[in-house]
Amino acid sequence: MLDLSTNIQKTEFDEVIALIEKASSIVVCAHTSPDGDAIGSGLALTSIIRRHWPLKHVVHLLADAAGEIPRIYQFLPGSDDCVSASVYEGTPDLFICVDLSAPDRLADAQPILVRSKMVAVFDHHPSSKPFWDAGLVRPGAAAAGVIVTEFALHLGVRLAKEEAQCLFCALVTDTGRFQYQNADNEAFAIAGILVGAGASPAEVALHVYQSDSLAYMH
Image: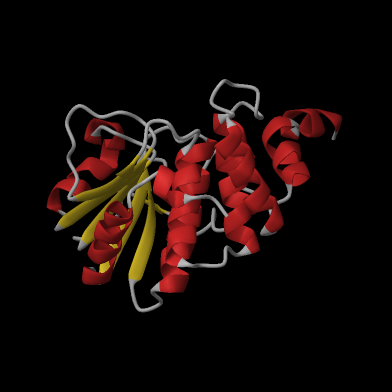
């Protein structure tokens, strides 16, 4: 297991957990034009919160008006259980931003953020103007999926196979299949944890990087 003390402080985890425990209604939303990290991290975090706090009402929002997950990520568990921000009319107790450091990247979800009672952030980008009440923000992390994985470890949650699959997709896409410079020791350690929890690297590669070739062959 990773030494979490070298990454995000325990107090930061506890502050985010406190917000979740205060909230009855929670929205999880990533940035507009979502990539694999945004989608995978958001889906996994939604599932983790639902399992660990089963009495919470948790909605996974898509910031874009179309409200559709890109085709190459539709194989991910939970991808068919998302709501477009353009049709969401609720006022959540807690709005959780994933993989974004600026609220203007929320598109149609920004008004929902504004009317939310509390805001939390899971992100790996630097921010000059924090807009959240509590956050797990670490620019050194390879992907938001790393932070969501660490959150699950801190909670003591045993990752479900479906969550591990989403998080592995988040990690592999933001590291360019582990070819970018951000593919550090921690990224590979997290990848090992996710594969151990049931993630299938072959399935992620097939859908994300080979789906166009397969469609052409058919």
